[in-house]
Length: 321
Image (tube, rainbow, N blue to C red; front, side):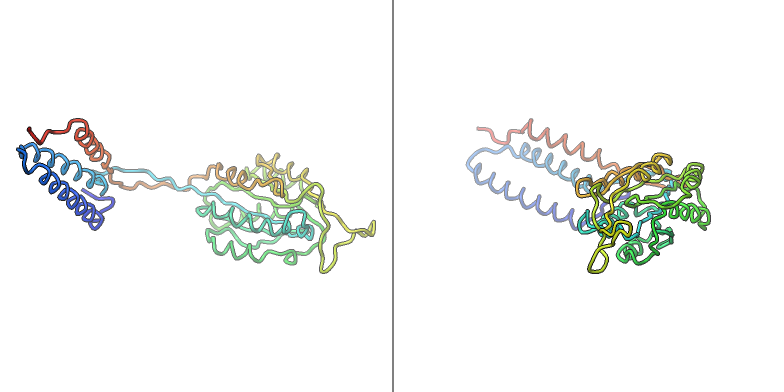
């Protein structure tokens, strides 16, 4: 027999407490009934019943395992690239404290939910770069998130197709070519000045790579800070205003069988994004059979409860007047 929780110290303490309390009960019983005729055999029956079900409770607590059982464990895996827009418009403060700072905060919570999956980071603006390759290391991911800022990439406009193309390339060249569920989280305010999106969407659909797009910002928008001032619109010589443009992001999500979500002071859809990614079925990469002892604590617990109920509803008379 194997014990799941063989804590002899705890069991010994519980037994000692039971013994002490029951001894006090017997002393009190003796003092009350010392002038009366006590039928000792009935008292012993009552005491024996209580000792038996208390011992059964202790056995159940220790988790007895009798016999062996085999169990097949399937090993599943998902690969997830998070592509983060680092164009200057991500410094806009229509979401406090800024779009990028909010994204960094939310992503730290998001990746904690996928500790058993490989996650990589891609940063982009007019070009895309691998910030962190696919990894299980949560600490490395957190460090890279802390260092994100809009000075890490060239800023000559935003090309949303660039990070998607880079993610496809990295999925193809990954050394670990085990079949896995592959997906991308695309985070941006939606501004797009690229012209290769249609071809990239065709590749994503052909390879079954889902894109979950996350729009960051508001329709009202905000000016874009730069140093002590703001970025100016050269065509109007007025402060440039960046607004959330969700049309392209929604299209990407729809055509790749993904979903679109938003972050703003009104919409907080990170929990829904996490839930959608969790629902993805990771591809089975292998399986193994392990021996597992069958825990039989329930039977001892059931017997103890039965005797305890019997003790309550059918008290034995210990005194005859």
